Length: 341
Ligand code: TXA
Ligand code: MG
Image (cartoon, rainbow, N blue to C red; front, side):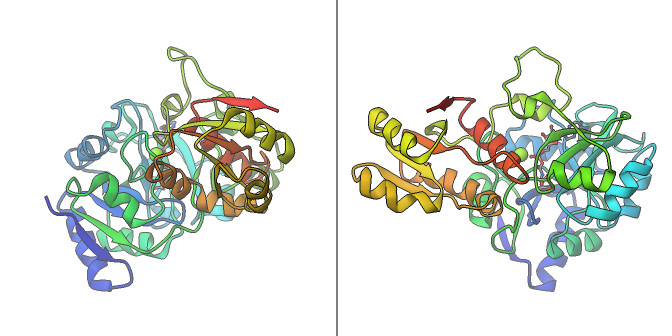
């Protein structure tokens, strides 16, 4: 199949993408977090194509996207008050709720689970597409399973060209890491994946702490039960072997001198110091603020492979706010190789 490259700023292209979705085809769509690989969530055969195109494990459930919060209600058994408050504050936006799935939503969407992941994306092109397609869209990130999520249409094509009907190009994604996944099926909200909305932001609106799944910052055993199946897979990983290094800049430089990796991924503010002191090692920056790091991380991970690095040391980001999401993605990209210096 030839993958069409459509332009999100052209209304006829949005209409074309919507028609493909209604016909049961796959379309990669821009969202404010990362590009998603969309299919009609109410058509099991279309949803099955997502798993095939991505090489996604059959037990990893998908997020369903709708244009308005009101369209989420019929898809779940109940929309609790907590969900309503958070939706008022953060939808449209990078926040996904786990709620009890209503019976008419095909099981394959949530990989057989009784629950369903739901979000209203903020990107105007995603919302225009949802309105025009007029069906809920199941959409995981539009990458090959296991590789870094796509924040550009070219990333989508590198992974899925020829396997999907179209990609709707809207340029780079503003947030850069995926949505926050919050389980609202029990009394205390449980953070399953840190993302575009921070735990601190959630707590401020709720006026109560959210529980943080231990799997966010730790490896989980292969046979342990997981609240969010996606967390057990190796994720976001470049081919290069990454090691996440905690500690100050001078200790980082000394460690790099000793280890002699092919390259270093550091904060932008570190680059000139590193280049002066370690002129033989390649060095890339991935931003200084958590927001900038989130926006640029996945593109940098892809670049590391393009440069052919086999080993790289990464300066550990701050773990607060959006930084917890950046840390979580880096921990998985490095297969939990983490050292303190
Ligand atoms: O920002 C995002 O969330 C992007 C864009 C495209 O919206 N989507 C995305 O989807 O990141 P995906 O499939 O790459 O990640 C979905 C995560 C996985 O970790 C999955 O296991 C979890 O959400 N998930 C989905 N349904 C779930 C459910 N019913 N219970 C628990 N976890 C669920
Ligand atoms: Mg993904």
